[in-house]
Amino acid sequence: MSEALAVLGGYLLGSLPFGYWLVRAFRHEDIRARGSGNVGATNVFRLYGRRLGIAVATLDFAKGLAAALLGLAVGGALVGVLAGAAAMFGHARPVFLRFRRGGKMVATGGGAAFALVPLAALTCVAVWLGVFVVTRYASLASIVTALVLPLCVWLYGYPWPVLAFAIVGGAAIVFLHRRNIARLFAGTEHRFELRRIRRAPSG
Image 1 (cartoon, rainbow, N blue to C red):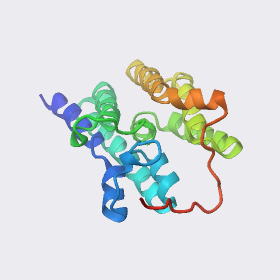
Image 2: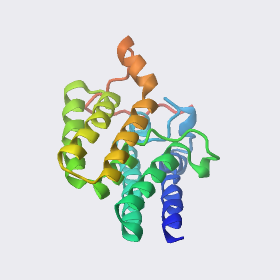
Image 3: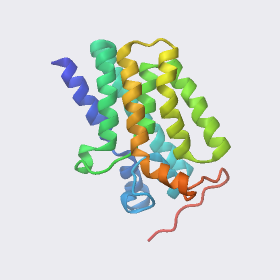
Image 4: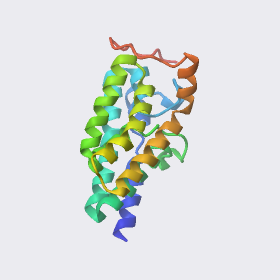
């Protein structure tokens, strides 16, 4: 019973749509009607700048971390994996937004990975930063990191439930980036400027 509650709690934590709530609170706009329509940190960062973008990324990361840690405390690696996966699913299809499209699970999945596979997660942070700095494509950095995560988990010798989490979670992240992949091949994907991010005009 407690294991099931931990997984449900993971889903509810993942469903907290911080990108939607913070933009509503501080910019009085619906992030779902701006940019890519995504409530994740990348869209918030692109439209509203570093402060809101970093705040959303931190909170999305924290909810994945909290969900996986809850599962680990309740039932070990398997329940930790299930609770972390539930948080990722909640981020993608949040109950608080009536199961409509949420985010692409990168920050939330990163938080869960830090709880479950800290060494592999740290390696993946380095990979993400390296790809992003070189290419300035957040989507490409996320896709490459999602593909690298299972390899890192396997190389560091984590147990099979965590390896399964890395494979399925990484595949899900790549799938949610399928439109970005098409734009990358077409040469139309958005490239971040590493200098000052200007606030998007209202309206």
